[in-house]
Structure formats: C-alpha cells, structure tokens
Image 1: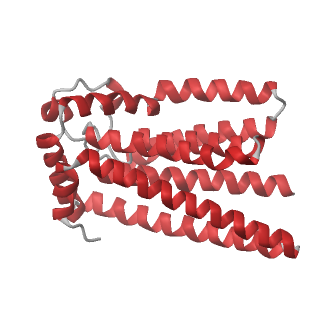
Image 2: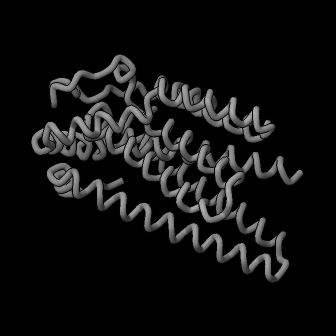
Length: 266
C-alpha cells in the first residue's frame, strides 16, 4: 500500500478545508448511491423482477464487504509491520500539530463526544427502550446486537494489534480522557459512531416516511465522519486507526443489516 507523504502534509496544513471537502465529497457520493439504488428498485418493481434484484443486492453488498475486509487486513498488516503507512500517519500528525488552531482543536474536542462510550451507551439504552415500547422487538434486537457486537470486535482487534497511540498531550496540550489511553488500532470511537449512527439511520429508514430517508442517512454519515476526523485532529488516534475503525464498523453494520433483512424475509 503506497502512501503519498505530500498528501499527508497537504491535509495536515489545511485541516479544516480538507475536512469540509471530504465531507462534501462523501455526502455527494452517498446521495448519488442512494438515488441510484432508488432508481434500480423502481425499475425492479416496474418489471416485477424482485428475485433478480434481491440477488443483485446481495452480490453487491457482499462484494463491498469483501473489498472492505481485504483493505482492513492490508492496513492491519501494514500497521503491524510499520510500513509506509506509519510514515504517512506520523507526517500527518506532525502537520496537524503545527497548523491546527486551538479553537479548531476545541471544536473537534466537542464533536468527538458524539462517539464517546458514555454517549453511545446512553443512546443505545434510549433507542432500545423506545423500540420495545413501540413493539419493534426485531429492530430492538438488531440494535442491541449491532452495538454490543461492535464493541466486542473492537476490543478483540485492539488486543490483537496492540498499537500505541500518538502522544496527544505533548502535541496539543489537550487533556486526554482515560478512555483514550488504551490501544490505538482500530479506533473504537470511529467504529462505534459508524455502527451506532448507521444502525439508527437504518432503523429510521424502516420506520419513517420515504421523504426522510435520504436526509437521515446523510445526517448519520456526517456525524460518523465528523467523529472519525476528530480523532485524528485531536491526535488520540493515527489516521490509519480511523480508516480501519471505519472499515471494521461498516463490515459489522453490513453483516447485521444483511442478517436482519434475511431473517425478515424468511
């Protein structure tokens, strides 16, 4: 895996524009993919070709999951071997430390709490209770399995790779909470945000009118992306930790959604 160190320096010295550009590109991609999916479903419904459409959906989902798994394994191997990825991570961290203003750091310090274990635990309990009260026990089970499973997976991966974090307090003098003192790879805040807000978006898509579907998905993507970027800006994680956390979270979320869809059709 080849990393352009000049890109690391460019991103690090222009952190806010890079964040905004990345957010815009990601939301544009998700919007386009959502609209394409909607179009394909409409064509499938018009032609009454439900079974081929379902097969195509599964093939596409499994292909994406397989590609993500391969990328994760490659990153994990590079992290363990301290290959070029480590140089990219270090240069990006250095550039961020030299260029990010205290105000920007504080703003991302607030945003990162959206992925805190306490925040996600409270959200998990609130949503689970609400779903049970609304007699959506299947979705409640999906929600609990998604959150608890991701936490267990992240703990196992951290203990397998045992990668040290960057020294954030030295880099920007921001007090680092105790839950940011464990192993670094992959980022638990990132995978937790991807799974929690992604699963919540899935639940809302299944229970809300169609006009709200895309806005809900885009909001979930924006929150997860902001949490992920905050971990790098605050330098409590290397950039590759965050990418790995995003991939592991997406993989687990895809497994949970596909399993729930399969059980719902059986």
